[in-house]
Length: 479
Ligand code: AMP
Image 1 (cartoon, rainbow, N blue to C red):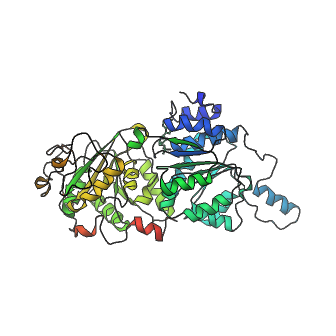
Image 2 (tube, protein in one colour; image 1 turned 180 degrees about the vertical axis):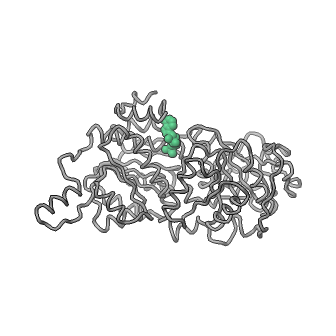
Image 3 (cartoon, helix red, strand yellow; image 1 turned 30 degrees about the vertical axis):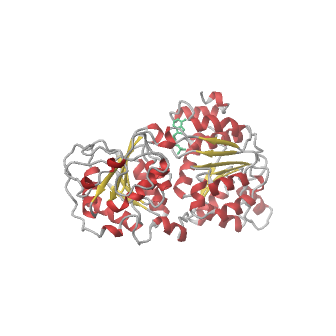
């Protein structure tokens, strides 16, 4: 199947060719023609599956083909103000009237969607896409809105602010996209989403993308769509089959730090993301790695948007080799050079594990995802395995053998034939993997430790009582 066969406008095909896309991904094959025909969509697909193009290409096609009403004859808010001035009237703010709205859970994802849109619409200059985000200076946002963009990509909180103050008018909205809808609900945006949806015309086309369509998100999807086409993509991208996963057991924090230091010296590593549970740890570890000679930087929700953008830019340009990040901040990062993901702390929710490891293996490349796990966290690994329906093998590195693993090999309790529901539920001891003890993947000798002060392990892992970004995001939010 080719992009031409999907019926896309020639300007888009040209831009896709420039981007090096040769054929549509499975989600694009199904979603693009249906969306061009005006169908509502409920799509379960993971990040990395090409979902952004799956909704943006048909939307751009419709905007370019003027399938959607265009307002060439109407004035932009800026022009409206100028004519008001020339009439001697007091200039007033004229609300932006976008044709398409994309809601995303985080600022990073919103910026990424806008960047992708600019790329796809490179030969369709009439189409403007802007991001409306928390953390961006207000005057800058007003300036962006005054250009009356056709496409608005927004995080819910800031969008509501602008709606409440009359800066945005959805009466001409034709298409609404909820990107990573499950994540928006996780982050507590249900009321905001309901309010935004209620402000859009009932005649709109709605496209909802989510890692899962079960439970609350599925119910919401059914409520806000009309006769939707349901697309479930269970391809290799969603199973992350191109990403090798491993667990390394660690005895304590000092062992964990030394192991991370060693793993980051892997010659096959281009760039890496190290995930921590807390913002403070992200800062501390980035500092420590910098002192150890790695080009490292932190990324978390407490940083100003400018600093976050600079860090992401440095990552994209390859100036930063190791990004130390929390879940919310790193969501949606799409940098092909990321070959390794390290879970310094395990994520709070199994879904976050899937999103974390999806930072590597982008666009079909191979990746490695390593979790550094203390012995008390076996249950959390099991929960992740149950969620992903994949086993995560335990690996041991020569010179970094944990003291406890030898006495409780996970492989002992493993049945052949892979994971089955209930497999993990009752196993009492540590046995839960198909690990091959002694298997070694990193051939280099142990790197020098960084001498970081040992910290009590219990406070740093999953069970820690410090506020993690996972819970903080509900109180402070990412906005
Ligand atoms: P997404 O799932 O939207 O985050 O996209 C994941 C990555 O795949 C991004 O780097 C896209 O640029 C890339 N991508 C999307 N569609 C295609 C395609 N048809 N061919 C090659 N790469 C693609």
